[in-house]
Length: 490
Image 1 (tube, rainbow, N blue to C red):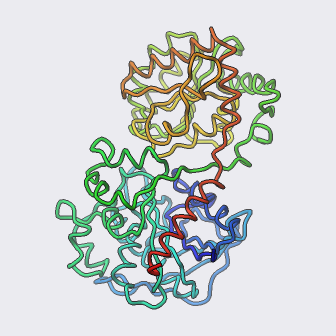
Image 2: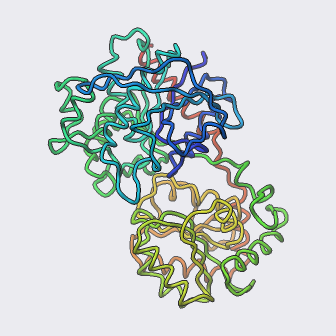
Image 3: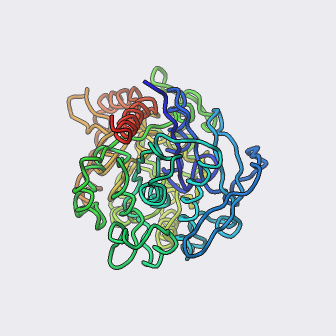
């Protein structure tokens, strides 16, 4: 089949700027698509955190004119670079007023009050850039609410533009909780005409993600389970009826991970390497991890790791209610993360009171995240919802058995332990309750103490699992072809 021109737009991309899993996806998927032979281009804002010298970014000639409806035309500079380790071009939209700030979306816990204009500007700049570089995409791939206006613009402002005559659109929902809800006057900035207001309207305001869902040729989520979940009131965040209505164009494609970065056999961040054939290094990593968190060096106690945002979505309130019962068990726990201030103080205080059982590092360190994956026996993810999740997949590779709530990608990627000593890669619970969390951790700990053969077999099962980007890229490729052929009437 013919190779495709694919334009991927996102508000963050690894390694340039990251706040969550969206950046990981857009930093990895284009490389896998390029390996399939497609012409893939990536566009993102040039935030202050994106160092032009570090990434050898080069300025493009001229300025980019960006129409902003009632606000008139604004101008941007464009820089060009490459995704590291590839020949995939990345274009950076630079605008001092919109992106010359410390944070991506917020600062000191407060969202920027012009995020609506910032990302309408970015989305329109993506379309204008495509014309500027004479790149005629078969598919424009938008991600989350920040670029959800792209399918809307494609079907309205650019309907009769010959540069996009056969261009289709795909919208990936990485987290439905964040939808881009703004005042209805944003319609005048979008400039698509008030006759389209009903397509974006929610409570007499504009919902950008709703507009993207309505207009996109296809919608994907980052796991199969999450595609089903967002059609329900529990996970739909008010859009479940719309999503159910357009479910004919909804697909779940599981994220992959980069096994070159997350491999215990080659990991440069850990004290000792190991792999499924020789696990001796894992015991030494555990000892190093205990030392890092000033815990007693005990090989005879299970060590449970946590890495992530201290946020409601991640089940941090469940953990707060469960922690005292967990600490009654003969276990050790290490935590790495930051987020809600109450949680930071709460868990720091617990670490101070129980230095022999609980270690806590507030903040984020990539090296420490690797060390927790390598040195822990189990990894806890009690998320209330999890569109995909990556840490449970990292954990599998490191023989660190996940303990997860069975939601979204956690349910898709983890096989529940069965007491036949042959099946399973982790431990799952279903109720979003502290009791369910405690009971499942207790089950995992009991297995570690009383069924070591079964536990080690699960480690073997887990380490042989693979969730790489090659398979996911093939699924995206098939969907891109379907979108392109549909636009061409084939």
